[in-house]
Amino acid sequence: MPESNTKISRAVNYTPKSKFWKTIVGQRALILMSLPIFAYIYIINYRPLKGLVMAFQDYRPGKAEQKWVGFKQFEILFSDEAFLRVIRNTLCMSLINLIAGFFFAILLAILINEIKHIVFKKVVQSISYLPHFLSWIIVTGLISTFLSSDGGLINDFLIKLGLITDPVHWLAQPKMFWGIVGAAHVWKEMGWDSIIYLAAITGISPELYEAAVIDGANRFQRIRYITLPGIKSTFIVLLILRLGWILNAGFEVQFLLGNGIVSDVSQTIDIFVLKNGISLGNYSLATAAGMFKSVVSLIMITIANYVSKRIGEERLV
Amino acid sequence: MAKSHYLKRSIQDRLFDIFNCSFMIILMFVMVFPFWNTIVVSLNEAIDGIKGNLYFWPRVFTFNNYTNLFRTNTLVDAFYVSVSKTIIVTLLNVFFSALAAYILSRRDFVLKKILTIALVVTLYLDVGLIPQYFNFRDLGLINNYMVYIVPGLLGALNVIVIRTFIYGLPESLAESAKIDGAGEFRIFVQIIIPLCKPILATVALWVAVGAWNSWFDTYIFASSKQHLSTLQYEMMKLLSSAMIQSGSINPGIAATGSTSAVTVTPNSVRSAITIIAALPIIFIYPFLQKYFVAGLVIGGVKG
Image 1: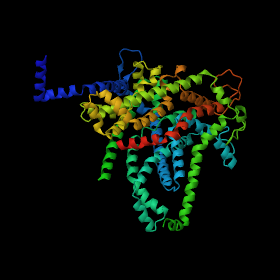
Image 2: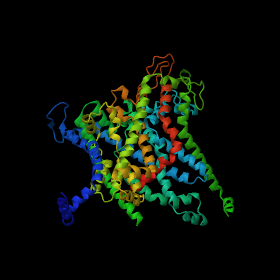
Image 3: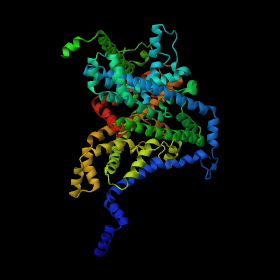
Image 4: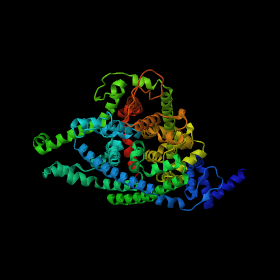
């Protein structure tokens, strides 16, 4: 035994291949610890990928041999008016959320930064972040209570102001739906989204502001010529990243607030997948729809990450 | 110097401050009032609540809406499921994410690159609902309590955030332990975990909030088993039934299906559940706020 051991160690010293084995042996504890993690990632995140073959089949549960149909499911999808409408809804709601979200987050960050009273500032910040941590169930619950057509406070208020005479059933107005979803997003996320801009504003050199004051710049001019340019690069990077996620319009709000009357404008790709797959059992069609979204998203997110990284580097130079 | 500067402030400057202050007060009102009003409705007698005009204070004060909720087993069970799955998933996720982070923090580890790629890809790769559903079905997770636990054992983003934190620790600590003969796992448990407490608290908070708030997993994977229902899912069912009724409130319905004589209305039940579901978060938020927000900054570093 000892003889063979020395043989191995001698070999280890001389050939690159055995150097590799030496590393393996040396790191056996780490390798052992990483195995369950590899296995877990595989089972939860990569194993489901094989289910994507359903998109190219005419999947019927319980059959041993599935029929291959090529791209038929995708052809059905893109000739289906319902699916095209769903894409339109996803893109429109995503864009509304994006534009309104950015606008209010930046506005809030700038205004919070202008508050001089430290305690008041802290209170405003704390309160504005809170809704971010509540579930959409709770938030949509609040929304539907407030917008309710009997006893809802919004209707109450508008009637008292004399703007409307009869209560409006807001959630049954197809024209209002995208706006309501956008407002809900702004309400829930504007505080949280403003944090990153506040951090960027904090990074602006105070000397710039001091110099501007000496030169006689007023508050609006300081915001316009110092604060806004100071957060421009953060804004651009975030905008690009968010554009990468454009097909992820979220579906919880739309799902929870949507109803039969507004379904033409409320359904997103995710809801289409859910409805066709889980409720109707059109597994292949739903998988194809989901796959379309995943592939397009993956490409866009990769491009967005690449571009934003490039811009981030330029900023550093 | 500062004072003379203050005196010189222009009218425009002061107007700006007044406007800004008013804006913030309105904003805080818009953020807080919905909760306040929901609390008011939930503490007001149900039948009286139909009359409306409840704004800042309950008219006929009562705890009945709450005691009534907990008279039925449905919600008590759902509450237990919510609490237990949140605790279990949080502890396990933090442990395994930290373990993965520790392994990845070892710069010379042979499988480091493969593991990093395998993890990061999961952040961008969305396999889609249907393939995931079939995967869980094959794993026997459908209508099984484990569907709350198993999918949430590891979070790629959590791993990256914890790893970034470990990078910031002095390497000499782990090395001296190694010289003293400690194995990798022991170094992880006895040295790395205690040192990582602040970041682990942040990650735990994220996971806990996510687990507490989730309802979609119940809806998709466990909706046919009542004993697996969670508080958020019970809330969702009430919400959708209220939407279907769309306005027509029938006073006197025991919306929770209870046989008690105490009357409730959909509105009073919904308000009470909203508050119960939101309360843990609203309650811990002021105390742990720095951890909530710290996470965003650390998460941003990785970008």
